[in-house]
Image (cartoon, rainbow, N blue to C red):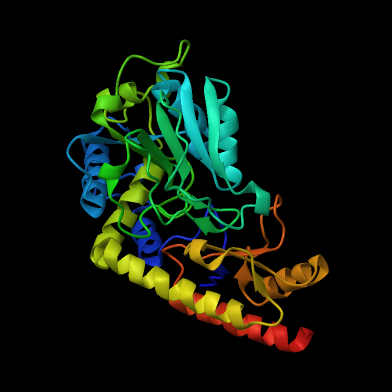
Length: 360
């Protein structure tokens, strides 16, 4: 079996035990005589899959009883619209812009009301996270929006913003389930699965029940209303059945290794090893201020674009794939999500040391 170390930012690698379990179930899921991707979402067999997935996720994150877990489609990008459509009652919202994705969400929100950028780190090309303690929050803002981990720029908002009592919404796509998270601090959390949890096609939304109302932006499509998804247990229309099934296997895998506390230790160990090398390298340079570095997406560069390209090419030939930085930023990026083994990071650093020795 030929497996590369896949450092893609998403769709990203999945845990091998999960892939093997899915392989075992491919033709006949637990005696049903069919694959999960063939079965009716209304069947008792599939109902058990989605019910177990929700229960395991609730257990992993200690999700309070007054929060609903939804499995929706459209990716994180659709949430940029769904959030203001459903939550912008006063037609006002505040956004903390710490990178590409929070900026995209901010621009989308302007279609539905007055979106205000109350903090930004664009002045230094998002190489840090803006201060979130003494924010100038709009008095009648409906919510404050943040992106917990900026996948492209490789920064993380380690401190939960002081919203002065306002509802807090978080795009947690690229760090979801990488460590424990106090769900009760947020009104809504969403995460596209294809980063850290499962295949592309499903987005997880965790939303406080009091936010599930009929008061939405005029013209909001039925399928863009959180309340509709909640009332129908994510089954108003055909959900992304197979993607949810894989997510469910990932949840069970996380529980089997000790949960999110254990996962956090593993992620800190992996990122620490790579950042330690970058801090001492004479060829490679990290792009984000130390205090704001992501454990999931490590961004760095060499002295030139030509050298970056050479590194990507040689790394791929050596079995290290998808190390090119995002097209909007350039440089290099190693995404080391939950499924990336420590051995993969060690092997990458060994290769980087060899490349450095040959190119200085």
